Amino acid sequence: MSFREELAKYTAEAEGIIASFLPAEEGEAGKLAEAMNYSINAGGKRLRPVMMKMAYEMFGGDGEIIRPFMAAMEMIHTHSLIHDDLPAMDNDEYRRGKKTTHIVYGEAAAILAGDGLLNLAYETAAQALVRVSGDPVTAQRAARALAILSGKTGFAGMIGGQSVDVAMDGKKLTSSQLDFIYRLKTGALIEASLMIGAVLAGADEDQVRTMEVIGRKIGIAFQIRDDILDVTGDERELGKPTHSDERNEKTTYVTLYGLDKANTDVNLLTQEAMQLLGGLGRPHPLLPDLLRSLVQRTK
Image 1 (cartoon, one colour):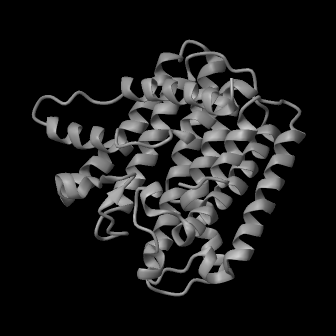
Image 2 (cartoon, rainbow, N blue to C red):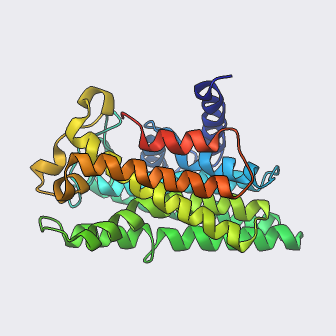
Image 3 (cartoon, rainbow, N blue to C red):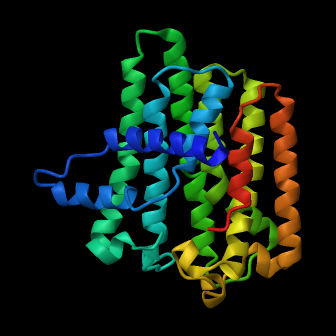
């Protein structure tokens, strides 16, 4: 099979896993469940759960423990998108070609839908830990994975990066501030996906740390690529407006360094990540191609 065909199989599997953990749209809070499900089912490539599964396989994992963590990761990612799109943040009306959650359900409901998905992610991962409590080795791995998931999401991770992005809105960023935002806001969940897959499969600490560095490099390259696409991308293909950074007077890698350096650094970061991945000596047939596809994408 081609890479696209193989990736489609992983994506379909991830879709099924995520759907199995979503709330039922019934009862008094049924409308909240509907908003949560709308957001998570509004499209997306499920890249983070897929790379988590591939990292798990790379280190010899073959059990069911990965499934709730895959779902939890996508819930956290979707929560961040809902809140990013809010009027108080980026104020976007469309994402992936569809109206954003606050446009469809209202701002208050969107805030609660994001909160609901974030909390559901932790519930889902914690339930996995409870289910393996009788197996000390697997339970220890699951506890470590839960610590990574929560740490990379919170103050020292994605939300911390987002806070600096919001605080500096409309202000010119320094290179160190931009790096901090990219490393945490975008890179943290990619780091977590690779690390959790490795941890749950039994990788040692050095291997987990290497996966973290790989995720960091790919995460930064991914965000730089996003900046590039905001300038050069096709609005219909992207499913969202282009030149929004320019309209919002937002400092990006492109505005700070220019398109040429942005493209050069994406390639350099990707090359460094691939060298680290190859140095682990545990080849996966698809993970290198997946990581490269993140930073070479056109949408």
